[in-house]
Image 1 (cartoon, rainbow, N blue to C red):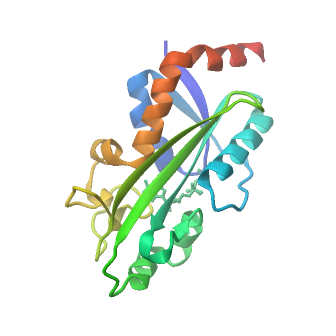
Image 2: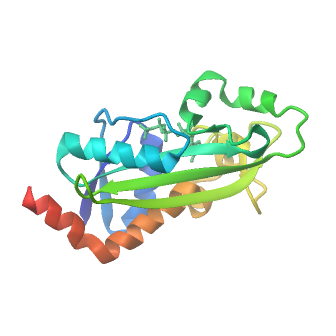
Amino acid sequence: MTLELLFATNNLNKVREAEFVLNKFGISLKTITVSKIEIQSNSLREIAIYAARSAYRAVRRPIIVEDSGLFIDALNGFPGPYSSYVYKTIGLNGILKLLDGVLNRKARFEAVVALAVNENDIYVFEGYVEGYISSEIKGSSGFGFDPIFIPIGCSETFGEMDIAKKTSYSHRGRAFRELGIWLTNNRDKVLIQDKAL
Ligand code: ITT
């Protein structure tokens, strides 16, 4: 039987990629746009845990959230937790401008998925991918910073990959595979909580 989990997010690209991974584990997602509280913090983990608890309080059912970001070495980890805001403001061209003439183009994407089974039991699954910022914008698949991020060992940006290829490398793919594995062994934790309510 398929397990349906709630996912609190406003980003439907995250949902597409998460579902692509979780469907293989017999899990489907129902997206809800509850106004989860995003604290200001330098730690994605802290932000995700707080958001998961606040989303749980809103629906009183097991629920997941995901917080992610792009961390650029030469910019001391910027934009990190501020990735969403930075994408909307200076965008891809702004990042390329900041790195104009910079030789060290190392960067990493990180994703933290937090599953709140109840207010106190919050399970965290993390994934990251190391790579480089490209010198130009390439590709139109995916979202956000995909067209300027090349994972290590690849010659294409995430923006040039289809969803199967991107999720095989990506931070999100890794974090959601961890969640899928965990749920395979702990399905009852989510079901029991669900039934009790
Ligand atoms: P929710 O908080 O509603 O889930 P959001 O897009 O605001 O959606 P975050 O606060 O986690 O999510 O911001 C993450 C940002 O990092 C995202 O908006 C992108 O700009 C960037 N990002 C994260 N994962 C990415 C990926 O796989 N490809 C490209 N950019 C990504």
